[in-house]
Image 1 (cartoon, rainbow, N blue to C red):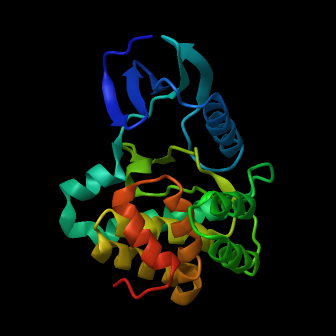
Image 2: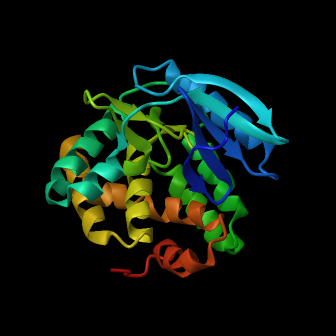
Length: 249
């Protein structure tokens, strides 16, 4: 494998292009179970009607785990939006359309979103009373079985020259409530300091899916608690304000 052409870097992985292949190389210490779970999620999503790069193999490279998939020639929606900021709302509309296409799919063997969130709440640093209240709140939310991306953002959408749309990075995919997935995307906007863009996104999602805004917002406490498990101290105080339902605007 040729590991000279880096196309992206993340805190715990590096992504390379080798001809018509994309190699996601996980850094030393990345759990084997997480790598295998991501590849399994990817394979299951391939069985839906969505456009995703073909999974080619899971292997070891220089002692580290790697997922090898088809390389898709194109630009991410994030790159397109940066290059053409005047059409931001048009691109957010496209983004929401793609997310609703995801939610229209079914993949029964994916991890249940509710179960994943229940486990993550258990792992938070909140006291037992807060954990119990959050888990009760989660249990009271409507139960759906839609495919949810779990990390849906413009950088995870690739647009080819002929306009074909591919969705990448299925490591957090679950089956569950599409509004929980939207709340997660909205939270990403808030955490990255793009509240104005986030407001356009949420408004567009609610209009296109015919979903009341306050219904999506009811998921925010749950996804914020889940995010707090990652231990990013810079985010924690903001997430804590959401979890404790303080007015954070």
